[in-house]
Image (cartoon, rainbow, N blue to C red; front, top):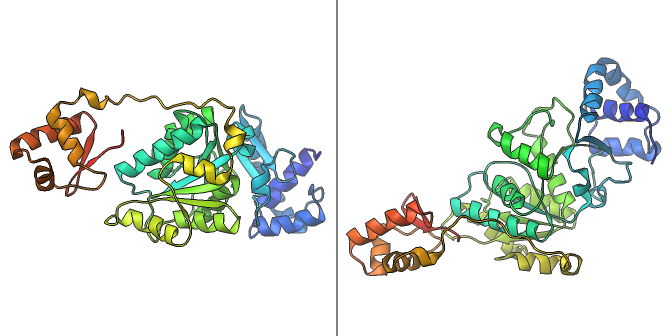
Length: 355
């Protein structure tokens, strides 16, 4: 649809109007699809926030920065179909990715090392098949998913605040890399802080953009389950990666599986379930670069101890019993295996890392 800058100013003014959320905004659009006439409720906003609106417009003039409206022809089709699509999207990066096939990946902020490795591996493999990985830039599983995707392909980060800041702060560099090789997006205008109430709204966009959602590590009360609820309402597929029965972070995933989520152990199960094999079969898959040493570089004792470990925590005594080796030999080998990145020490013992 064709619109001019005055229309755009109207959209931005209504967006910044108090108590006007996506549902109320959509009701105005039903009467005036291009918002050619500014609703009376937003006239005071326009009068009092001209400088902020012009700041939004100036931001969009920068290289690789875009403002996308619900009436735009290139607005992502899947997202447009949800109950309350964001009327305005602020995008930094490649906006064409928003309409590409996407898989959402979410999970615990307080993730385990093995959870992060699983997220990285899944994301790298899926992105290697030219699927865009969508997540929320949070600590833990989100960040690992973004990094995995960047190792072979592209990713989208959906933020719960304005794009003029990055939260959490420690992900500033990651956000920069995503902007160069993907996109960061938000429905919130510049200057919006990351308030608690914004994150559930952010989550509906994560699931709304995607064909399906993969959950890796989530407690029963995890915020990731909010994304799952949105996904179910939107008719998206939900996948859950199982974990140890002794880990709190696995309980949310196990609950999802009991409730009907698809248990997945590898990406082929995701691709098959979504029926997207044909659409990507002609594309050459990419693989993530790895710096890990091959298992052949280990000696017989180290290999024996590695075989006695699993992806659950094992105490030194349990490792000694399983391997049948003397304590001093086991302890020395454990140190070497940890230094070379095959295992990691955790409270209560050691776990084997993914290779």
